[in-house]
Structure formats: structure tokens, C-alpha cells
Image (cartoon, rainbow, N blue to C red; front, side):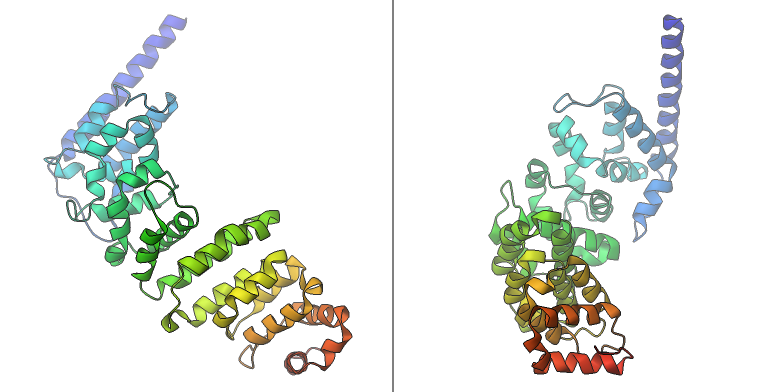
Length: 353
């Protein structure tokens, strides 16, 4: 019984790899579409589908660091990475989605066969697809990133080739890397890269800082002190051009989820805060975090900076925050900032008190 099962499994694998070989042979010399939709082309093309199936088979065999590529898959991966097989270019793009695993299992093969396709100068046609595939679900694995360092920092020079989704992925990846640098990457490397970014990219970086702090849970104060504050102090561009409404909105959100780090966040970011027009999410997150009663002066200062007459809809959450501020110290009811916010609430249909 066991022997028959083994024979059937062997036959299925022979059939499977035979079909993969036939697919590669059929498309080996075809032209491939290299454009903004290259990822879509790759994952839907027969070559891409075949390579994805091979990867799934390989993963099912069990993987260990430095064990080398499985003898069944290595000839296939060698084949699709050949420079003289233009019709198989979608294969390396699919492999790029498993780049870290490939590097950990067989770093020498990966460096020799796959990493050259990430080089913007050496492989300008396929490099966008390689980066988009990798950035679909990137992780900070510094031994690999050390090998890709020059190409990694060249990505912003090719932003238009990546598309909006992958640009945002890169900026988030860059931000997390800058907060926890490793390998040969230095603060100066990240400072240079961030300063070279277009101004509109800073909104994505600021939003990444907000999401990172929000995700820190009960460790927010420590995360702010050890990650967010050093990033802002050492890497954030301190230029007038960077003070956009979108950046202010992101920094407002960051303050709203800072919890016990709220006073420090406000002090650090107050010069970057301005009325943002729609504060509903900021106010809601601030209310949920429930720190206003502990820091009423700072909370009032913050609210007065981000809310103005252009904020057309103010929620019940703001009224509750104002009540918490006044409850902490009734004298705040006489503060001009407080009174202005009360008037805005009343103008938008809220009764006070």
C-alpha cells in the first residue's frame, strides 16, 4: 500500500514537472508586456502561474536555512532567470514575491541569478516588476537588504514606474527600516533618501508613523520615545514645504493615539499642526484613547490648533472631550480657546452644556 502510494505520488510529480517544462518551452522566445500592469500580466500568464505552482510545491517539501534549492526546482528557477529567455521574464517577477525565503535557503543562487534583476541600471525593463512583487509583502531582513542597498535607495528615482500602491508600500517599508535600522544601513542613508523624496511622499511617511504608534498598543509611550521621536528629530525634513495640510492631518492622528505620550507628542509636533478641515477621525481616536482628563491643558491646546471654522461637522465625541477638559478643571470654561470651540459646537447643532 505504502509503495503504491509512493509510486502514484512520483508519477504525479513527474507529470507536474513535465507540464511545467512544456509551458516554459512554449513561451520561451515570446515577447512579454513590460508596462505599468506588469504584475497583473505576470500573475495571470501561464509562465507566472506555472512558477507559482512550483513555488507552492517547493514550500510543501519543508524548507530550512542554507539547505540549497531543491533539485527538482533548481533547474526550473535557473531556466527562467536566463538572460536569453525573454519570454520567461514573468518567472523572476513571481520569484521576487518569495525573495526572502529564496535568499535564506540559497543566498548564493539568489545573489547570482535573481538580485541582478532588481538593478535599475542593469535590468531597467524588469526591475519595476521585481520591486513591485517584493514590495507586495516586504519584511526587514537585513542580510538581503544589504545586497539590495543601492537599488533600494534608487527606488524613489523610479517612483512613476511603480504605481501608487507600491510607492506607498515602499515608503512604509522605508519608514519602518529607518526606525529600526540594521545591517550596513545608517541613519545618514535614510536621511539622504527621505530628503530626496517628493514633498507629497511625506504624507505617507507621517501616516506610517501614526499607524506604527497606533499598533504599539500598551507600549505606545515606550514606542514613541524609542522610535517615533528619534525618527522625527533625526530624519524628518524640517522645511516649510513639508508643512502641508496632509502632513498636519497625519501628525494630528499620531497625537490622538499617543496615550501617555500625548504631551511629548504635542510638544514635538505643535509647530506642524494646523486646521485640517475634517477632524472627525482625530477626535474619535482621541476620545477612544481616553487621556484627555489626565492632560486637559495639552488637550485643549491641541484641539484649538486643529479645529477652525472650516470644520463643517463636529461630532458628539468633541463635546464629550470638552466636558472632560472642563471636568478636570472648571477654570478652562473661561479660556478663550475653550469658548471658541463651544461656539463652533453650538453653531453645528450641539447643545452646551
